Length: 451
Image (cartoon, rainbow, N blue to C red; front, side, top):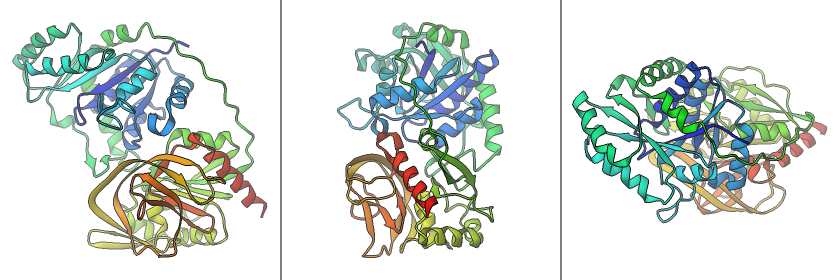
């Protein structure tokens, strides 16, 4: 299968990958192409920017979570547009460790056999940008780098100096983007601000994309992607008829979901109905609940005010309705969230309190399942990721956990996945197709519907 595709990589984080990727998507759409966006790594927020400009849900590509074969399968299966654009993560060669390419953007480019454009922040260099570029080109015997974009150029003279230096690379300069503080996108402790939370961002993304796209040579980009290496077509996945309904929390507080995870639930026979823990006074008629990550601390007052929803979810948990929650969802299911000067009451399924911290917890996770739960009816290894600025305090000494971690921190003493009734909540995020998580969750929801 021939899929025209391109990877946008950076020398480091913060060089402007997301803004430039959005601009390329915008420019290609102006030329009449449909574009499917992808994001390397486990991040939830950057893909929302790509989705906003592409008007299509972005898919994550993470080797650690998915494995090489599932990653390639997801990429090919979801590349249904004219062109697929993959935004990288961190620096091009940054992955799981310092001695390996594993899970890096370059690893994903290699798996998908994609050409790459390297983005360099030129704000504090001139001739040295060529040394940087050559280092990235020669660091691996097949860097896959086919062009360069320079960001934050200060003047015409600065541009000329950089272009002269880059002649040594024998690669085309695809874009020269002027320094412009108006193009900077807002950030928060977990990265960029989610577009679901600040709808005005969608307008800013579109405006910045228009400005940046004028500085890009789209014809050269089209030349780079015009002869794609064929990829194997994966076996078709068959969707079962809906047999159960799962209510999925989706609003400004909870919106961190992998599109593949939602598709996995639907494929296994779940009908998904969305609801807002902030606004709704009624829960969709359902046999299970899924509460993803997000920023419940930001709108803690609103979550606390919706007493009906908090009581309803707690009652359903006590009735053994299957409830699965990740990170922000876990925080919501504790007794309270302490954020700065205020403390907000939450659902209270778990005998613990959430306290926001200044220290970031960012890890890929690996461990084993030690207790059967609503996602797994047997004990096996697991891999996921955790990313948060909070911790659970006053965790009850008799708390039951589903996961024991070898890599990562979890909730307490490298234990994660608190279990209460038929409720499972963890700091760790899982990729459902890495095991039978979706199948077993749906099975448990069907059991719940028959009670």
